Image: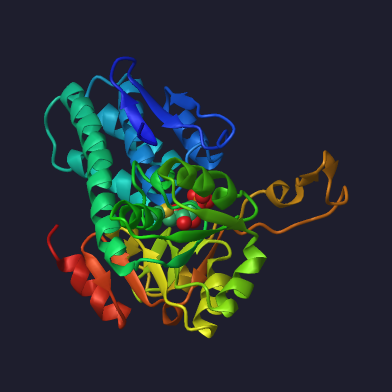
Length: 349
Ligand code: MRU
């Protein structure tokens, strides 16, 4: 099953409910773009490529919901939906990218409103299908860098659940495993939402890849011990200079890896590269509810005092100097990133 897909029979958007995993595999349905924006905000679906495709389908729902009979009315409803979807989560570049790809269809369009509705769904479906193809390409390219016997630290979840299918860094690990390479994954639990402990571990179970979950604050210990060959993660947005915004904790992980001469790879589709931003300081960082940090229960007892306050930035920025290479669907990009990212973006698919 894909992480996100269109149900053609019922004209609904469906997605795996990632809040329920690993306990149960449930499908969540959206009938409106508002429900889609809520699903993204509340992390029913998460991961940059997955929310990009989901938002594209959200526009197809908006087109379906709109009662406009002429083009002007439909366009105005679509613009409203685009803004609601775009504001659901601010950091991932793919969200705005997916919406832009769909809206491009309407530029210079002068057919009927109903035909535009059909074209929008077709484009959203193409985006989802292309995501699977490019993730597989990235997985293949990334797998070449993985050696037999590697122990890899993986942060957050960047597997099939973070994309339409396959995923980025976990896709590369899975591809290498299927090639017969023996790999061991140290899975950062990834506080506060535990995407590593819940989702990455669940995926690794399905693939039969050996792994152990570690608390985020154990990564430095293992990096210093000499057993880790590589650190791999994804990105929600990459600035023009190669600074990488990714799940909170990535920066500390990359710093510890750099200090211990362990190579650091970001596995990222080119749709996550935002050349309008010169460096990572300009990337908007989502701050989520403090409840995600404070609501910890140990044996049914709340672990934090009632009245405690917390901060909860969902992402941080890893400066380009800590990154060994950025693996994309078009090839592996090495420093100097500013120049080499620009070159790779110019390449045809
Ligand atoms: O808050 P999340 O779970 O949406 O964050 C996801 C990540 O940070 C991933 O590492 C990122 O989206 C890359 S997915 C290829």
